[in-house]
Image (tube, rainbow, N blue to C red):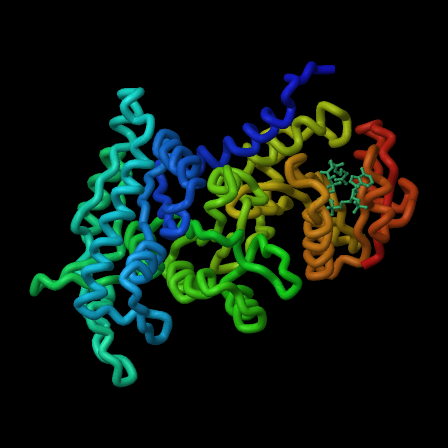
Length: 440
Ligand code: ACO
């Protein structure tokens, strides 16, 4: 038996994170950080983690909010902020406060993200933080008879400039303000800016970092994964906090426009960003245009993933050995289960049309994802495939997992119940597997 490093959980966590780190390298992640988080003492840890993302080769764009800073300034001057349809109405007086608040958040962010940079020359070049005049804006104008003043919307974003900085391994900081061609300044919505930046840069992920853990269901439980449709339905039925509700329109637009994942996480939870980006379960709510888990037909490119799943089990005698060549010739029989772009399981269906029978084989769920129902999903997939092919019986052979199949309706059977061709192979293999059948 192989010895295990004493901190087994570290090794497991590192192995789980590795494919995600590999996947995100050279991809763009947009982090939209609420000003409540920037102002909180918890931001120091988060800032360190953000810097580390840059060192892992991930292109990071930070968009920040200003709401808390503006509210504080308005409170100091005992003024209230009128709003319409969730957007602040910005008059000349408010605009001065917005500019002031924006400058303050920016300096706080720059300071936090600069910590530790001077210690290492490598870090200095990778994490240099660049901000600039990236957005041109236009006024929102008059809505329902209300002049929104200096509250604006995006006219254009200088993506070429942002990409150039990212290419040079800099982190880019974008503020929710823009200037018009006539030289006026407009206050913008942070969510809108973050979504448009993510869309224009074809970002892999857009992460909103707020005070809340994520989206909650009717019983107040955190919802881990949502498709765009599910999110819309849930927000209609279950009111969310103001901060989370505000994000929905930009989230849906980002997803519809090709951003693969939008994630809501808490900035108060130490490590939440890493957990969301580098683990399967994440830490907050992850939203995608379509359902998260899906099962698809395998292709030759999946062979390395199949081998990674099956080899340890072959070595333990749980599965019969299948060579690369075998997999290449029989790849059409395999289906792959993916969660969030990562492969977590496979299964094969070998058809015996003459006998109207099908063999379910090579059912494997990654050890990192077991007991989450994926085995059941793969079984359902094979049952549906078999029914679609007009097969009447599904069978499987197992040395170690008979109980799992029995609990799912398979019945003990004998070798003579198998197609003749399979009986011959059974005797050749001499593994003494138990036989199970399931009428379809
Ligand atoms: N025997 C009995 N029950 C089991 C076994 C087992 N060998 N393995 C897991 N279970 C139970 C779990 O305890 C859990 O029970 P619970 O719901 O009461 O808590 C339940 O199965 C989990 O079900 P799922 O979440 O749907 O299954 P999972 O995604 O974990 O996948 C699978 C099940 C495929 C068996 C997985 O454990 C695995 O990959 N095992 C190693 C490979 C293997 O044995 N594959 C089958 C080879 S035989 C063939 O392919 C024909």
